[in-house]
Length: 346
Ligand SMILES: NC(=O)c1ccc[n+]([C@@H]2O[C@H](COP(=O)([O-])OP(=O)(O)OC[C@H]3O[C@@H](n4cnc5c(N)ncnc54)[C@H](O)[C@@H]3O)[C@@H](O)[C@H]2O)c1
Image 1 (spheres, rainbow, N blue to C red):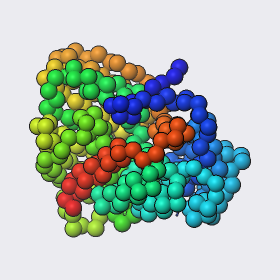
Image 2: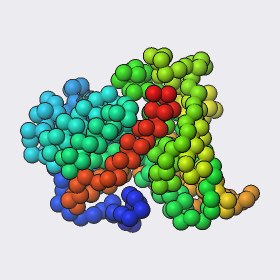
Image 3: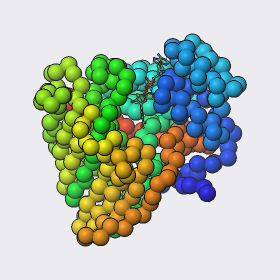
């Protein structure tokens, strides 16, 4: 079955749009990089031309599922080759610098989140994309789940009436397993920039990116309150975000919380005519439902399974194949980064 993905209010693209395959270079083929490469190749959305990763075992592993690809040393070498776009999945500190280099070389980019470690970095990347007039995508993967697409549709339809409350939660009871995530210079922050970035994006996207009036937050590391001056990443965060429309957004996220399950992930919108929720099921990182609330009644609109991982990359590759260049939607990345900066008290 063909799925239409809602990319913004005006655009829908098929996952199977049949146009000439873009030639792609994959920079960073660790956990996520390899997954995104395999999904793009499997969906025949792009041709894997180059792979680069300083860890040889990672590039060798990636090569196993990309027969005709060439392993190159680095981004510089990749950019001298014949490629249309670069897919970046390196540690977060490298995203902005590598994305700008690729854009300046005239290549489109699909980058992992976060695009930058703060608003200033993110803004520079978006400016570079505008200047180069190249398509810039970020892996805001949860937007592309069927459950979230359903929630977006309900919020956009106006059927919830006046939306006054949004509750966002992302508890990852494990936390990341790579050391760089815990170094603020390399990651830009802890659970907020890692997990909260998705939730802030989902809330603002559904609500058409209204102005943000006020942001307050409490950040913790190993149970102790921390502030913007502490050189340590937060593993628990609670934030109140007041939008100019009057809507209140509550964000809670964490790593390593004794959550009683592997993950709790949800984005719930409450309005004067009811509610709608995007929620994981049974503590899963992968299975989601969309629920519509009528008073005390729940109607489930969308059930797992849904093979959504990598779908954002496929959508970007399809847009690239269709000849899309810079889209002003990229400004949304800056708006989300600004909210994260305000949560961090920067
Ligand atoms: N969109 C999502 O939902 C999602 C989910 C998980 C991770 N991520 C993001 O993906 C990124 C990577 O995360 P991961 O868990 O795959 O990390 P990882 O450590 O497994 O992978 C990073 C890879 O980049 C390689 N690398 C390091 N420096 C490089 C360089 N200069 N050039 C090329 N490759 C280089 C590393 O060797 C490694 O293979 C992070 O920014 C993370 O936030 C996004």
